[in-house]
Image (cartoon, rainbow, N blue to C red; front, top):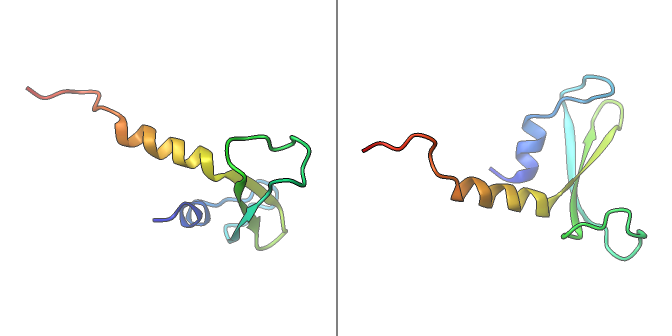
Length: 79
């Protein structure tokens, strides 16, 4: 499942409690003065379909999270 699909599936609007959202991937490089100075210049905008409330997610943060999960060792080791 893609990152955007996971966000849409688990969406719950913090403003109006809506459960329907649309996503859009956008590059935010060059135009913003270090406001979003993260490792990636690609972000996912998650917008509530009812009220328009928008959250911004970094694709770089998601990639790091997936790598960490793939490298994680089980807490209990079986002999």
